[in-house]
Image 1 (tube, rainbow, N blue to C red):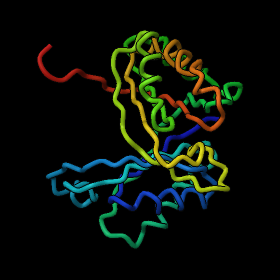
Image 2 (cartoon, rainbow, N blue to C red):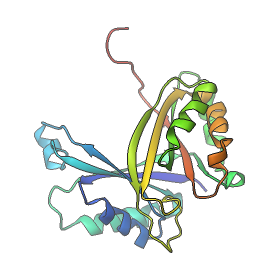
Image 3 (cartoon, one colour):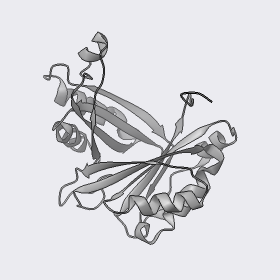
Image 4 (cartoon, rainbow, N blue to C red):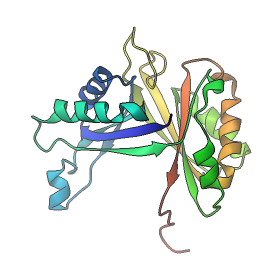
Length: 218
């Protein structure tokens, strides 16, 4: 069974509303990062993506839960005006710290990697203080650089913290874009870190990066 990454972009301090709606439909916890909309286009303003602070909510769900979770979030937001956007991405690779025997089926990921022109976005969410360790391991395995974003978990004590991990409020999200053929080596290097051996200390998920283009002068 595959997974979906559900991403919602909503006004600041509204991320918990999304996460709670998702959990009521069977999802685990999520991760919230803070961003800022920069849209000047009138249509995007109507979508709630103007120049204001935003919560970006990341929730990984099993594919068979997608419709129920998606609909519950829409229902929870239906009375909000210009509230934001929601979309999903395929997530063929999903690994939880301390559960390396439960890796998702990598067949789709292997098929993607046959085309060396493709890129993969490796996303690592760990408790605060471990993102630099993950980046160092990734560099040794062939990665260039990455981006670290401060985040917070949404799982509450007693929850089955599927995506929220341990009840540690502060998280770090590390995003690394790499050529597809390097993905497996980099993911393996990160999962071999001591901090990743403890159940609940982090997760890794990967998505195909489409239409990758370098900006500026070549």
